[in-house]
Amino acid sequence: MKKTSEVDIKALRSDILAGLDAPTLAEKYGISETALGKLIVQLIENGDLGHEDLATLYSVSQIVHALTWECPDCHKVVPAAYEECTECGNRRK
Ligand SMILES: [Zn+2]
Image (cartoon, rainbow, N blue to C red):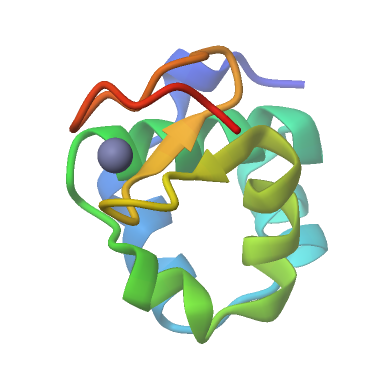
């Protein structure tokens, strides 16, 4: 297994947008699906992947769903580690 820091995140982003599913991505990049999820969350935090991108990518969005929550007010996708929205500061409900 590779470390997530060794993954080419720009290439990963392209493959996600190309519609590769989660198991394929995990195998291609030699990482676990959990690590893949964390990288996807990182892409979301960086603003490289939008919620609208994920909505069309069912397999990937399932993983993201387990690792994030969506702010009911501003619809920002927030990593599960945060109890408050990183955009508007609302608490997780
Ligand atoms: Zn918010």
